Image (tube, rainbow, N blue to C red):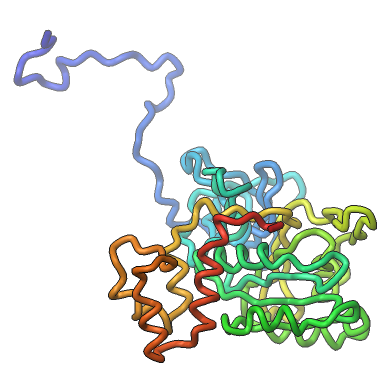
Length: 336
């Protein structure tokens, strides 16, 4: 039943009194055009540490952002107390558009995405050549996540004094992924540190790797003394390391020549969020060959046009093999 006439006036509609005497609620949000620009460098239980100019500022997420969460690497707009003094707290009112996003899920059946880092230029995949043994399937999954998220991958192979890197490098040679090989002696002498640092200059680089591969040791060698973290050891029985990094953090490299984002060690890297069609974009030499593929082609079936494309000499067969190996990682567990 209609309570009011067809041509009602605003004065005819009753309004509820505001008992508190304050201003009524509105859906119009302030634009915060005077907000300062900052970068999130750590997140700890809802409190975010941001860098604003050269000051470290502690902040909380504004309620108006809803469920949108800021992560390490995010460029944000901040208002409030920006002095960075003790017991002060600012407010993040806007998260700027991201240029890249590294995501993972707990496993391939988990629909909940976890954003690891935003706006990184490259992903350094740290893998030990021995103690613990390399896990190629985990490397493949990290590569897929990098390609899907818009990051350039970098292989960092540690402990070359315990095993040769030749077999692993041969397996990933067709992908054209840049790599750095390090040993314990080279890390101690600083020689390996310089080689790795050259790959990081002027970039924001996220470091990932499962526990025990020497990621924290490498990060400690790359950053200043006051920013270092403790290191763990590999269990002699299980072959697994102890997690020494519990939350992601962004650290400036010496000389302001880039940023390093240290992330917690992972034992799995789910790819539930990855659309297989995104992976082909990391293979520009193969992508033109997909024009003749049937609709919704998985690129790993009898009617795939890539087989004829490669047979005609347009691309290296090893590249097609690498593509299909990466595309099949969602169907395989990391330990397989």
